Length: 513
Image 1 (cartoon, one colour):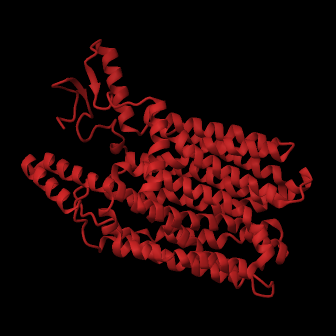
Image 2 (tube, helix red, strand yellow):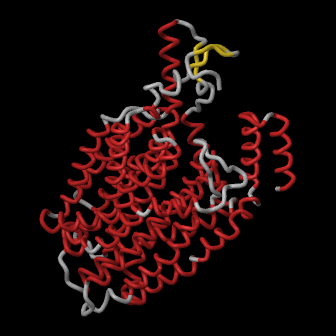
Image 3 (cartoon, helix red, strand yellow):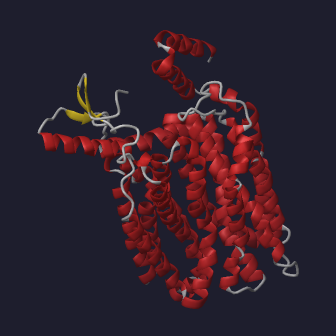
């Protein structure tokens, strides 16, 4: 690229950042302000995820209020919510490419709060189900765009730590839902489980007003537009002006490409199956825990929800272990196709991420089976099933974080589409699994129902180990990934190797692939 400033180029007048230290560049914001941005988007993402499970805390109150006999009908509130998140990830969230992240965030949290109001005021379950679907659809932008915001403002060498800080919110959302919601329902009633969400979302909206735009292509497009208006010279432009897509084009791409990748890429097929199953069992536990602690052990709603403390502790332990796990990851050999990161550091192969997933594949079913055989009868001390949530929560968190890291590193410029397929798969499984929880526990009993779920995890456990050993070969079989690696060779040549060397390297890679 030419000098980082407003300068003419061969095609006209190119607007870029004014040097590496341009204060308008989000990468150059102060550490304090970056921390504020990450905290705000983490909080708002937590609110959206928290709402997915806190709803179930008020189930007994809704049964009485709406004269509902089957609890599965109320469990549909979780199902439609997760379906809304899945749809929103594909339909609404990508609009940040056109309008920027800040407007999408503000609209997302505003309409999320607005559409939660009917849930608090509802006179029927049908009203709640409809409102929750659309609230989740709008709230989904917080889930899908928040990682992009972290990416916008944090240099590559610090992103792992930044993502860990951000993930404290969303990854604790499912477990904190019943912990807080249980006490809210016990002392204030089921409607207040929804009013609390409205209040939290309102606070999140006010905090979001403090966050400036972070999406660099949008900032540079706006900067070029301001320059054209001020100078009256239409030749001023940014490199992103010509690449701006219409909302319809973006929607079409974000619906078609993830679907195509989901059915043609073996990496995504297996990892979507694995992570979706783990995620589905996590959401089934939000039906199973009340059965164990309220129905069998006779606990009140507040303490019953607090039983998820073990899962929450496991999540926090998993996040805080990131520096140690990062050492494990970095101890692997460099990626032969892309050994140097954009910041000049050493980059390991994507399969290094899978080493953590191998640990998760062991501790997650361990926690589930531990829970299955200590949850009942009630004569077994309550601390044992609660403690079982620690490895279960840690394994779920590692599976979530490092599978996404693995897929993102495998698919590079197509990471957004790859992760969209995974988000949809997880949301769909999370939507379905709670519906089978009550009948399964009633038919098999708590011990064998929990064991069945643990054995399902054991059956899928070989997937991380296979990819850890053979992932490089599997990636070489992907035409899409091979083409991306060829482009990387060419780009490397443009940046320093010379065109002849790059072309030769690309040709060698095509031949070897």
